[in-house]
Image (cartoon, rainbow, N blue to C red; front, side):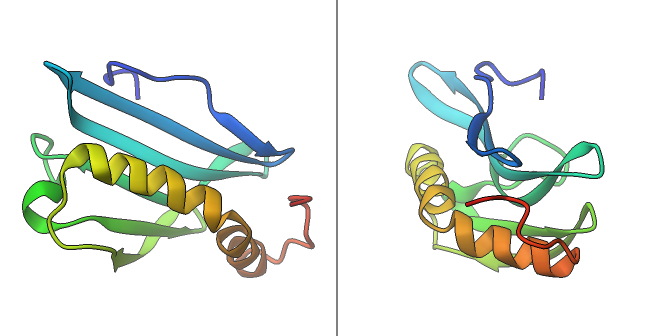
Length: 124
């Protein structure tokens, strides 16, 4: 993540849950971003769900052309991709991603805990 222009500290939602955000702007416009919900499990922060936009990266996603989607993780691996919208400006995608993770954190974490046989350790 060190190649993003802005990487604020993760926003801790609960003891074992946080949202990590990073983005880059050019002339005031968002050109790349990553917003990820994470869970502390087995000694490390594991991705739960991720939104991202990076039209220049190999395998990157250009949400302005192809639409916004959410990557869903299990056991540290991407297991599914959920289409969220049609084409959307990157700044709106960044806002949407942050809002969605905050509004649906309990649902995403509950699924993660079920998949990993965790007994409600998140304290949400």
